[in-house]
Image (cartoon, rainbow, N blue to C red; front, side, top):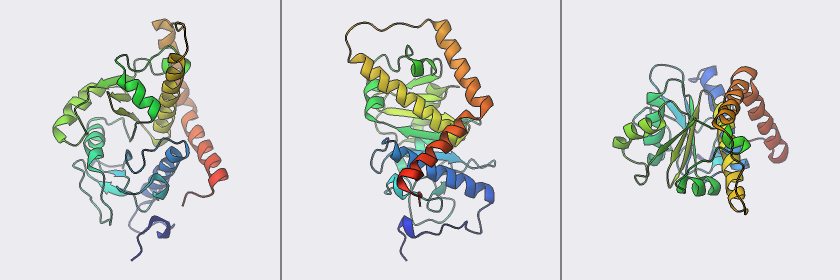
Length: 258
């Protein structure tokens, strides 16, 4: 049987609920958006979305496929140990299970996790100071960033507790000398948070290349900026509008995702 992603059905499989199929479609679009923005790491990195219910099952990409090859149908469903709970010809990336399972298992408020290490992200998290909060985007992240010291490739379950302790109640986890994970209550909110982090580190890298000191912001202003941004996202549907607008833009330029 030809199992290439482009040959898979566009119709909802009968065993899936409408709710799960909608989540699969949104997650697949998120994978395509990450590629569209140029934030992929070839076949590596991962985005996960938690499924409704007490089992803490979540969806993640099949390992070995590029993000443009992800479809709603070929996403794999796994438990908190990274074991597939439904048949699939694909396997997951073991390096992703420890990170994603740890967050999904510990944070009831989190329904999506995105892990990236773009060049600006990797450059900033290699620096001792981490993410700077004196820029427009960086200020929106003030008090929302946890830091986790590098322990090598994230493969082992025994690191989970330390990663969760490093994240605490925050929504951005800096994996020092590595990359970031962002976690939020929905796919759209997580994508928008990632975009904010990416813009913050891009500007931080550009500002660092210019001579002269930066203009510092007071803690009061950074707190105000963070709180207003959070209010805008939580109360106005801003993140969902942003996500769907970017999907439309991507489809205009590239055509349908699958």
